[in-house]
Length: 327
Image (cartoon, rainbow, N blue to C red; front, side, top):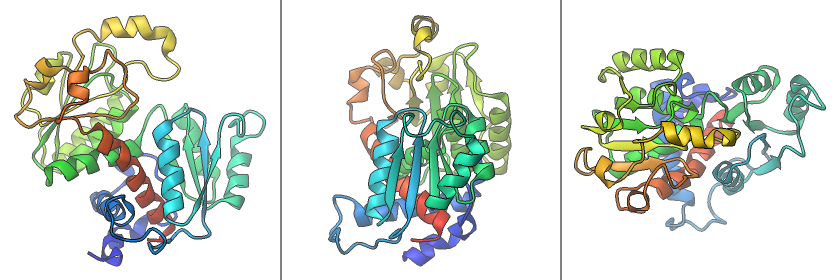
């Protein structure tokens, strides 16, 4: 398919913010995944296209990348992806921009909007990204907040489609903390017709409003009701994909011992994987800690973690291109 055909479902994204996966229509989600795959084919290391001859649709465009929280994958994927498309990514760490400290969030949003064409921000509270997007006059991308992580969901879904092909009717099991990564993944899965099964320890459930949205999306898209349990093996049974994430997120280090104890039985190991369907795969958004998954699973043929990580670049490229209408 030509780029113009791939871009057709994305016309409504021009100038829009991207704060959570449920803001996308099913057609837009499909369009972003298809465009991401096209970018991988064009700009990836296996491409026959000379990098100097590849299209540079973001020439003259710049992206302000605000990081309240550090991240290997988010920074490298955005900065490199912007460069591949001909644009410029500008890293702004905590020592460069302290949102709402030395300058109000509103003023920062207005200033950056004058310099840049997109503002991407990795923040602590979701209210920060909402305030940025309220005042910015250019599109804003949520690169992670405590409520949502939509870019990760795009990368995960792309990895699964690259491996399985059509995902409708498949089942994904989440084993771990009911956090921001799960929030967007469960809604994204429902949109693609993927059944969702969730195991979280008591007290670590996903947010009730996200569960409600996912259940509505599941009904809308003809998938099974969301299955929730506190027993990891019950969630994994009958699943094609097993996903976990860190049990101790950045800023929660003081809770390490408590959390590790409360997540007892949630380690993804060969015994747990054996309860899934034949051919089941494993995802983790990284970085991983030793208690979350064994090396035997993490480095196995069933693990898609490194293609998943690479897809962070192709998918953020698609989002930036769609927001600017430059493909």
